[in-house]
Length: 270
Image 1 (tube, one colour):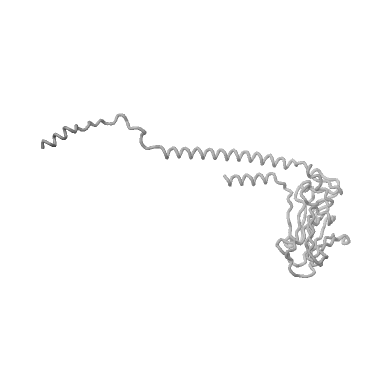
Image 2 (cartoon, rainbow, N blue to C red; image 1 turned 120 degrees about the vertical axis):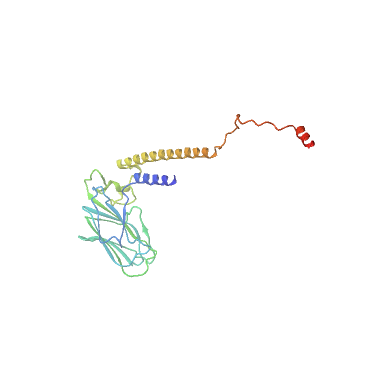
């Protein structure tokens, strides 16, 4: 029964979960190019890029290109780099090198910057973004967490029926709102989340999940009831006596033994 309940829970969660969960890429294993679909395609048009997958990252210089059909917005979420700019993160567009963003820890101590909505460092490009993570010297990178940024495929106004219009007149997929990531670039996709209406897809998923849960519960109760009836039947058969509760009244008649005096007299005459 416990296994059945676990299966029901997993299926129900999968039915009601939001399909907009972001895919995570790592700088050292993502390859050379990441291509995003358009915001209006209905596919996952955003992702998370981290500096490394393991506890400490290697100190080799790496470059990654992110492309999208119309435009990109990159928002730095975390910066935990080694002091004195031993690690440098650069974001730039090949055609606009003057708009480069360079981030590093200039202090002699650890400076870990984390922003929930990534409002501090945002880069917008026309469709191609270069991410470069370079190191001026080797050495241990433990326990620094490196960097983490969110990149999103966007396009300019007017927005489609399945898109969200940002305050800066950029359009993103409606599935990316209110997830804690700054996809628009101005965090407008994270405002008024308490009033966010449930999408029709979510409603259908919830209804299907509830119906499946009810059917599974009914089937479970039916199976339990059948097992209890079977156990009661087996118990009755096992404890039923193999002989009648009372002796039959038609038992054969046996004559009573002779009187004691007759037996005693017979013994004396011998």
